[in-house]
Length: 206
Ligand SMILES: Nc1ncnc2c1ncn2[C@@H]1O[C@H](COP(=O)(O)OP(=O)(O)OP(=O)(O)O)[C@@H](O)[C@H]1O
Ligand SMILES: O=P(O)(O)OC[C@H]1O[C@H](OP(=O)(O)OP(=O)(O)O)[C@H](O)[C@@H]1O
Image (cartoon, rainbow, N blue to C red; front, side, top):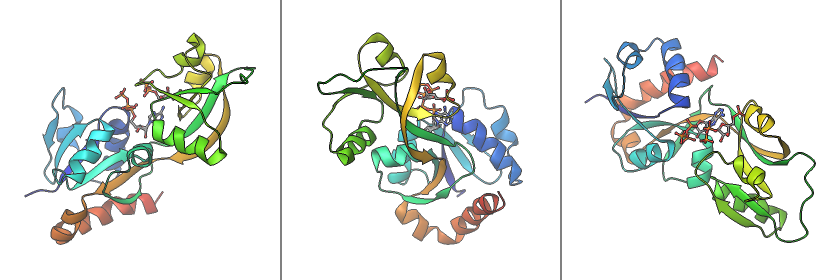
């Protein structure tokens, strides 16, 4: 059986494809996949899922390997092998507010998709805050008055800028990561190690 790889769909998928192609793997069947969620190449079986679901599939041994953002690993702490960083998907975590924002004297309200990361960040500062969980377009929260600030991913800073927000603090840097199921890595060692080494070659050559 071919190794099974779970890929985070969307943004990371496109960057993965470019990387995968640069390592001379067969990408042809992945290029025109349409709405298909599973694709077979000559060497691998791929499927595509949201980042956090990629970790669930890898954790449960449905996929041998997975490609996922480092933010997802820190936020959800799945029980998988975190093998190494991949040279794409670079972004950072930031606390952001409206420009010239005056923090209130009472407990701060922080909106984020990353509630565990936010909680850990403020805990380390010894500050108690109210965390409001949002699923996307988090930048809206300070603008509409739902929260004083947000904790969210920043790459170019364009989304913050175009919505009148500024970075108050930056505290974590991420890239995509290659992850593996813990027991599969032992059982299918002979098959997986050469694949992992080939992925690593691309990282070392960067
Ligand atoms: N603006 C960004 N620039 C670079 N990398 C990003 C950016 N936003 C997210 N990422 C990285 O890419 C991964 C996938 O993000 P993506 O936005 O495609 O999925 P998502 O956050 O689940 O969004 P959606 O709900 O739209 O699918 C994230 O886990 C993160 O590591
Ligand atoms: O610094 P930038 O390059 O502007 O990128 C940052 C934006 O990208 C992500 O959002 P995404 O596009 O995934 O949409 P979402 O808000 O629905 O998560 C992130 O949540 C920021 O909003």
